[in-house]
Length: 94
Image (cartoon, rainbow, N blue to C red; front, side):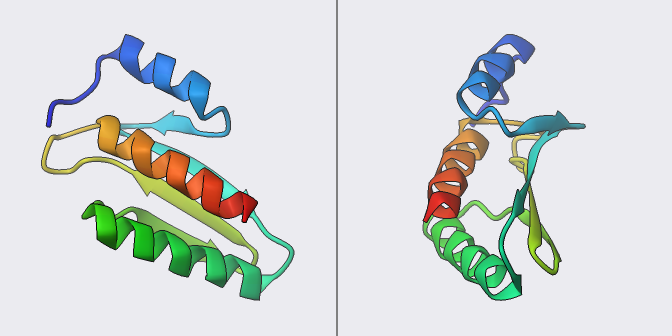
């Protein structure tokens, strides 16, 4: 899988407005009502990531969950990252 160009990344970011570029990755922090809801989200993301064979870096801080997505074997941001970002957005809306 090939990495996206800067223009392709920007076009894709326009579709996932709460995500931003962080080095060679895209990142978003999700805020939930409490720890339990945050963990349910993390578990749902883990299931989706395993199915897609694309695993994010996950940082959990009580009711905040930060996902960082990068396609390591491609060396940067690919469509796989934006696909999982869209899935995470959908899961967060629950």
